[in-house]
Length: 246
Ligand SMILES: NC(=O)c1ccc[n+]([C@@H]2O[C@H](COP(=O)([O-])OP(=O)(O)OC[C@H]3O[C@@H](n4cnc5c(N)ncnc54)[C@H](OP(=O)(O)O)[C@@H]3O)[C@@H](O)[C@H]2O)c1
Image (tube, rainbow, N blue to C red; front, top):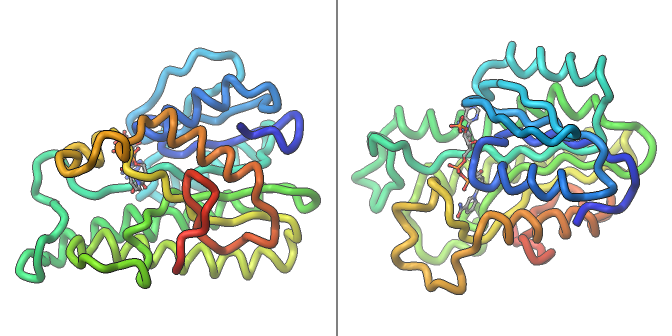
C-alpha cells in the first residue's frame, strides 16, 4: 500500500482500464491518500469523495495541458501513475506481430503514439506539478517484454519496441528532473500478466497462477512504489519490487 507519507494526492491516468480501475480502488482505501484524480479517455464514475473524475485523450496535447493546469490550481499532486497502453485493438486491425511479415507501419505508429510518445508528453505537463522537496513519483506502466536483454522469444515487434522506447524516455526524464527534484522517483512498472481486455486474447497460454487479478497487480505495484527511493529512479520494477533489466 502507498503509505510513505500522509495526505497524498495522486493522479491515475488510464483510470478506466483494468489495472487503472484497480489502482483507484486501492488508493481510495488507503488512509494515507487524501485525493485521487481519476483521469481517462472514456470517463469514469468513481463516487468516493476522495476521487474526482476527469476525461483526457492522451493523444491530444491540449487535453493533457488543460488537465495539468486544472490540477495545478486545485490541490496539486505528489504522484502520477500512467496506466494507459495498447497491445491490440478490438477490431483486430492492430494485433501483435507473430513475424516480420505482419509488420504494418500505420499500426507501429499508433502503438508507439499510445505507449511511448503519450506517456512522455504527459510527463512534460505533470512532472512540473510534483513537489520540489521530499519524495514524489511518476510511474508509467511498462512491460517486461520491453526489456531488450530479457527478449528470448521475439515477436510482438511494435509493442516490445514501444515499451523499450518508453523505458528510455523514463530514464531521460529521470536524469533531467533528478537535477532539480532530488527525491523524485521516475520509473516504469511491470504489472505481471494481468486479466484485462489488453491481455484477453493471449491468456490461453498463461498458467492460472501466473495470471493475476488487476487488484493483485495494482496492490503489488503500489507496494513497490512505496519502497522505491531516488536511488531507484530511471529504472523499471515489477509488481514484486524486483528490477526488470533494461
Ligand atoms: N494486462 C497485462 O497483462 C499487462 C502486462 C504488461 C503490461 N501491461 C501494461 O499495463 C497498462 C494497463 O493495461 P491494462 O491491462 O489495464 O489494459 P486495458 O484494460 O486495456 O486498459 C488500457 C487503458 O489505456 C487507455 N487508453 C488507450 N488509449 C488511450 C488514449 N488515446 N487516451 C487515453 N487513454 C487511452 C484506455 O482508455 P479507454 O478505457 O478510454 O479506452 C484504458 O484505460 C498498459 O500500459 C499495458 O501495456 C499490461
